[in-house]
Image 1 (cartoon, helix red, strand yellow):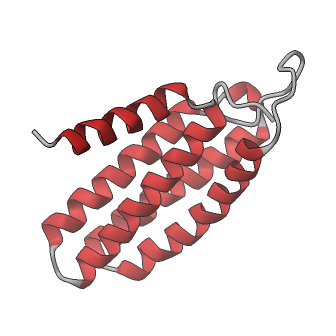
Image 2 (cartoon, one colour; image 1 turned 180 degrees about the horizontal axis):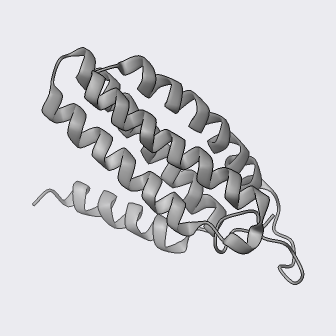
Length: 141
């Protein structure tokens, strides 16, 4: 076993386990971007199996983002849900039609959301008492 790989995996796992909820959402978006890029590249290379794997993993991340939405957050959570469901439909259509441009449009849309979450994650912490949620369970505005 490669000791450097083990150390790297341990560091990555520790980073996830100790990250603030807002940072976890950013990490999900980062993983999503990687899988979307892999999926589009695989479709262009006509590697349908690799494209399917990458897009399935992207869909699983979208499912996780959907699962973390807090309905009590109101309109923001509702809008995010609509966006995530739209992205899932587009990825399915992209896979069926072998259309990398559709994947790239989804990636562009989600990159904008990722930047918004990164801004939130970078904000200095404020006392959590009485702060409204932004739309993800545990995420604070």
